[in-house]
Image (cartoon, rainbow, N blue to C red; front, side, top):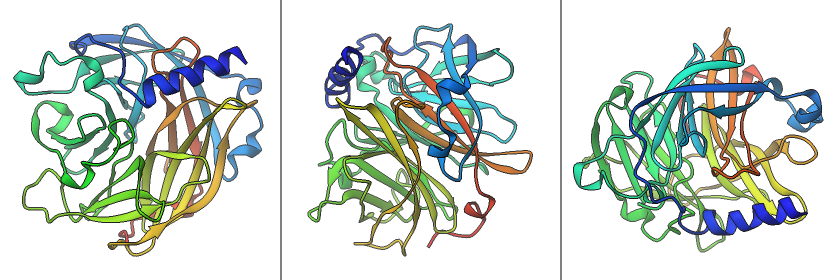
Length: 333
């Protein structure tokens, strides 16, 4: 009970307020990552993952003090991971054996913002275009979306969309989705519409591009009591949404929802079916990040947790084989 109470206090302090760190972002450095495979007892009942087949589960620790706090994740087909934490720092590494080498580096930023405290860089969502190598990052506190050159070598531009201006400063762009035709979508963690659905903003193109028309608003209804923390497009009309809850009884729990998207137009509201649950006594923590790759041709889902740099939480990385018919090359509706 003491552990749950402390985590609840952390939730109120960090997730509904500013992050406490005042140090500037880390500079580029090498990184050693330990990936401890979780035991069967720690993994818990595999039935709670429904049609998802668990193929790997690790607790990650790193040699750099900034390691952890993962809020979004990108994984290439060859297994290279790039995780973004919630203070504007990137971590590249592989899970191959118990220990691996990697790097940590800050997101590029303009000179006037170099010295900002880390809590201001509340980077919560990330997308990458596999064709151009460009990446987009959503910043919750800044209510900003920025686009970066391949490998994050340079900052190309940013926008602070008026459409998200009224979202809570720490309940905004937890998720960012890029569809195959170049449309972008973000779901507010806490901002809601008049009908009670979570506000969804959809752009017809790159939100950073001034030529992109103004976005339209849609809505998402998560499982009761849960809030969306990340979303992942699988192709066609299939979207996975990770939803989080914190209660005194259970601590952190999460539910993964599979959505069949309606036609993406103004006013559309969508929800989905729960396909996996993360709750005690099985794997449970502050899960915030989803990523998709292929392992030997098999569509593979990665799920990562944000430990908030708090000693009672963990940086967990889970890998699941997805049903093959969930993933396609079809366009979004």
